[in-house]
Length: 158
Image (cartoon, rainbow, N blue to C red; front, side, top):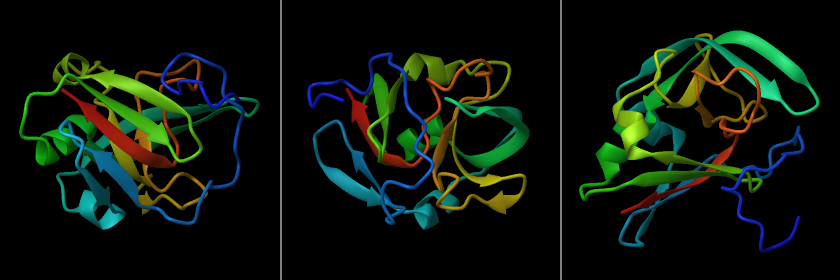
């Protein structure tokens, strides 16, 4: 992959079965450019939401599930840390794959459920191998282009 590749542009994504790093924390980049390290413990202090009947679709591995994922909604997470107006959150995996989610999309969640930063699956903590912190898009059923495993950075844009 070229160094100039934008991880937020649609592209195929090769499966990465091993965690890209041992560090489960991720970086939050605020609209003013300041950064903050977020841990699983930080996420677990926020209100928990469950999303049932979610599937994981991995390139080359087919579909697995359904699962019930739980964690904080992406909207609640951003609103906890960002006081200024914002338009989008870029969620990037530690292995370089990413997704852009717009504030308007989070204000009107899909009937399948809100987008969440999951830390639990079927009532138990996600392992590092499973993502540990994983962005789940409950409405996604046919491809893996919106879900982000191993969240490594969330950049909030004004």
